[in-house]
Amino acid sequence: MDLGLAGRVALVTGGSRGIGRATAHVFAREGMRIAIAARGAERLAATAAELTALGAEVLAIQADFGRPSEAARAVDETAARFGGLDVLVANAGGSVGERDLALSTDEDFDATFRFNVGHAIAATRAAVPHLEASGQGSAIFVASISGRAPSTRGAQYAAAKAGLIMAAKNLSWELGPQRIRVNAVSPGSLLFPGGGWERIRAERPEDFAKFEREDFPWGRLGTDTELADVIAFVASPRAGWVNGTDIQVDGGQRRPSIR
Ligand SMILES: NC(=O)c1ccc[n+]([C@@H]2O[C@H](COP(=O)([O-])OP(=O)(O)OC[C@H]3O[C@@H](n4cnc5c(N)ncnc54)[C@H](OP(=O)(O)O)[C@@H]3O)[C@@H](O)[C@H]2O)c1
Image (cartoon, rainbow, N blue to C red; front, side, top):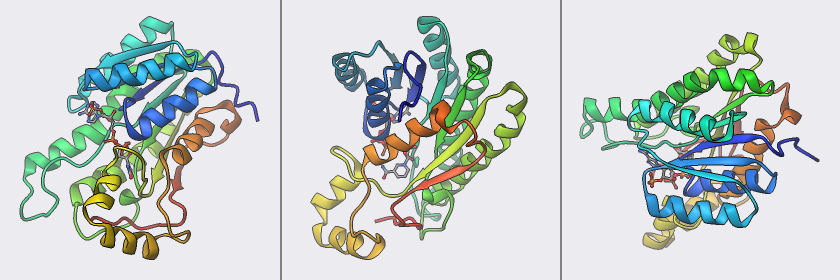
């Protein structure tokens, strides 16, 4: 299937590693022009080189999305470089601070919300004129199954991801008149080189094996590419009637595990 993304412009926040990097790779193979944004200059440069080798035009932006204004700057720089923006993937995210309620602070909660929800909202606000001008503008928020089902710890992350999912649904209505689609995708636990689950597998192999056996219908975690392919489809005009929804990409896992 031709996704119809060739020549279009994407910004992927957190695009230097993990899910964001895998998404940028899929976009490059689809012939898109791509901006990737993250904090670490070295990883950014390495991923930009990979994308260039795939034939893509690439812009690497150093930014810290703990400050939402940085997300707006990343959008502005992308549009200035490529003359517009068709696809925004707000992917950067994670839990800030301690995960146990008793140990976590109010600042951990604020920072987790700012990072996950704040940066996605600021990026979308800045992107609206460009996404509208695109005629096929699409914003995708990378949430989590943690925003859909409870776990035993990590309330600030769960609440932020739930907020992100609802923000996508709400914005799909607010931005509908401008013909901008807004969706969330909610990955389950994904295993990829350099990721958190790979580290846990190395540190606690028996616990990890039990996790794989008991929490997944297929007895394995998902991969970053299995999620990136779905993001690319949702971003594309072939998913033009997919709007205001949250797509679970978890192989049937359904509930998060904090280990
Ligand atoms: N991996 C999973 O199993 C899983 C499951 C469910 C949901 N998710 C969600 O998927 C998204 C991506 O996760 P991932 O596992 O691919 O993450 P990752 O491997 O930790 O990669 C995160 C990316 O974001 C960048 N980043 C991290 N903190 C940043 C900040 N403050 N400002 C700017 N960039 C930042 C990283 O580069 P720098 O560190 O250099 O900045 C990197 O490019 C997150 O929203 C996460 O919550 C992941």
